[in-house]
Length: 195
Image (cartoon, rainbow, N blue to C red; front, side):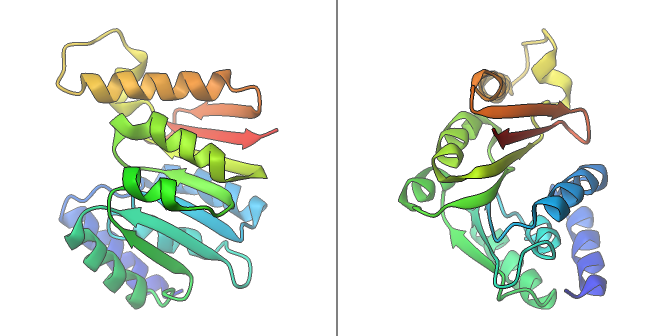
C-alpha cells in the first residue's frame, strides 16, 4: 500500500468535507482487524475509499474487500484513490444502493463494516447477520450519532435516523448469538462478535 498517497487521500477528503473514518475509530478497528486477519470484508458505505484502503492491509493473502457506494461521483473518486494507493487487486466496489445490492450477495464475510445511511442500520444488520461467518464480527460506525441516540432530545430533523439507530443497537444487544460492545470512540462504535 502506498502510504504517501493514503495521506493525500485523507487530506483531500477532509478539505472536501467528505465524512471519513475518524483517527481514534480507525485505531480501534486496526487492532480488531490485526487480531482477526480477515480474508473477506464487506463494507457498506465506501465514500472515497479511505477506510477500505486502510483495512486492506489486514487482509490475508488473496483476501478481498467488497464495498458498496450509491453516489456515482464518490465511486469514481474511490476507484481512483484505490488505484493510487495500489490496492485495486484487493478492493471491489459495487455501485448502487446497498438496500438493493445486499440481498443479491451470497458471500460469507469475516467482518462487516457498516458506515452508510444511519436510517438503514436495522436493514444492514439483518443482511450482515445473514452473510457473517460463524466466528465473524460486525463493526458499525457513528452509532451514537452526535450523542442524540443516548439523549432524550427528540426535536431534530434526524429523528428517523436516531430512532433507527436505537432500534439497531437494541437488536444487536438483544441478539443471543452476539457479544456486543459499544465504545464511545469517535461518534460511537458498535462491535458485535458472533459467539
